[in-house]
Image (cartoon, rainbow, N blue to C red; front, side, top):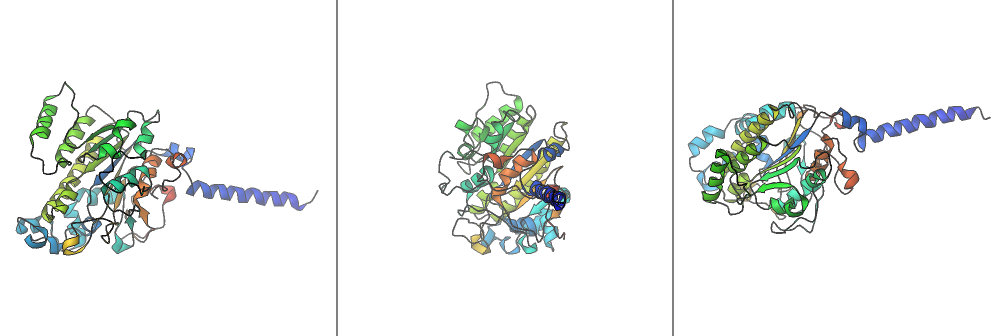
Length: 385
């Protein structure tokens, strides 16, 4: 027997073990890692078209006027949201995001600090963005907000088709196009979106009031209900349901930006921040969610820059591909505002939703992007500011 063979075999075993360890840290989540995860429910929250610039630096001074931002009361607007430093301004605008999420989770997308978050669909508007984040990959065929039923199943539909999550997935949004994006007619998902909601015959007094508001309020946007309406409808739903995967889409930040009303963009974002805080507190107060809840907060696209292009976004608007992504949950280390890290993309959100629930989405959908590096074993080396 060759005396060198045992030593050779030992080295082969060592190399195989090292390779397997490497794959375990870069490939699909292992059974052991899935068991160790604490997240029981995930909520994806989207502030439509809300720029990364306001998220990280607060209100933009040159837009807080009547000429460029159609502000109605510039004195009050500056009192509410103007501060001398970016850190103070962003906290005034979105206090929950910066005093809670930033302390307990992670935020990507501050390009001033070497963190880039982007869409990859090339179109830079809503339907392609919502498809990309929820399916895990862009679809070049989806080139219009009026595209119709989504040809792609989303991660929410995929989860709903699994016994563990069946009938524990819900979609709430202000925009009626979510009915198509999440394929309500064929996916079996519970979807409440837009103005014309389905109502049961037996309604509580609170539901009766909400239904009346939906049916009698003046529609500023025919296809987009107020954020406050959708939010209250969601809170009602949570009184009797405990979804494990939830989508929430707020639309006013985009509506007011297209209208050129910068003061209302800021007010809408501030109110949405408070709604997210209320949703977090409401869910955390329940035993099935307490310390077992992950929030992913983002936008579907960015916008342009300057005194005019801030209102718009599409494939011809430079910078509209830039977004931001925040994550907070029991499995996400509190790294705060990320800096000098590799680029992340909107397409990574779908696999992230599955991953924190202990599920491997990419085995079923290989074209989906890998999860965001938010779990402890996938954390990149970072420089905190």
